[in-house]
Image (cartoon, rainbow, N blue to C red; front, side, top):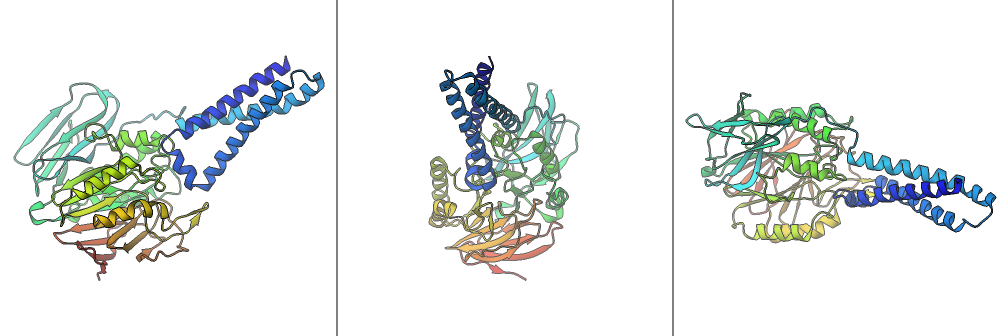
Length: 469
């Protein structure tokens, strides 16, 4: 009887642990995590080893059926203990990754203004007002200008809400509100004079105690101030620490209410997509109606300025052939003389250090796969986070900007300086603003309080940026 129970327990332990591992490795965000992060790679190797030992003990147990009662009893005890460990670890892994048992009591989010890949008749991107409600309900969007008002009402009860603002005119002040809520104002870029200003930054890492969320909120509040004339904001990934935890997304998105008057775009980071986090990212940052292509890479057009948001998470593991073909098709169809700006999470050229066995600097995988494309099609600016520092680099006519200082734990001083590096600041929180004109741009690294750290003059022609005052 004891031996039968041991065999059943061993089989259950193996199935739960091995099945849990197979499921976790099938998720979008696991491959890159194991590839880059030495700590998690070690954890998974240990779990795989335990699973293998349970399988071996099960096989020995079945082969040991005809042995003496003493030998069967002697072997049953450690097999049962090992199987119980596997059963507990497997269940813990499944519960942890699936976010089971952690219901989000307050799942409502504040309205946010999203940039979409759809282009209006006046050359500006259509916008979407999106938010989540605690329970299914119907809402109404009121929006317009001083002269005109539009109303859009939902026809069915929903939890995920999205209202489209289409065919926006350049250099125009608009307003919107949900139901009887607060009115938010925003002004569209002046395309006639080729002027557009945007802010970019990443790596806020909501959900971990070491992150400075108050700094993130200060940055967002300053981006939203009307006197700073920011037209768009680009979040460069790792908005949250664990993308599979819904409560972290709720906290982060409600903090983003500070920029509810600024059209925003999101790139997915490795922490956002961790394990099954890509589903939460898509739900909150790329809802279906305003983002019908159903991929975390997309293009935003504003007159002669073209933003291409990529899915570059840990390294180049998510840069699929499909995404590569899409990127090249987009770039080759952009007219010469227009601004080509790429934004994503993972970096290409960068200074940094070795952490958990991975070199967090000049990434040969992303450089090999993407930099030749940037150079071939004369991309002007490439923005990344991932490294929690501020840096400007230049290589073969392409400017690379690292701006991962929006609140996450800052990286230590670099132990490796990239040959492409022009300017670098460590142990400093901040973000970047860019003022775009017809053939030049002013790129400014800023402190959280919006004061300038360093600015550079960037040319459309690909020359090395020149430091300002």
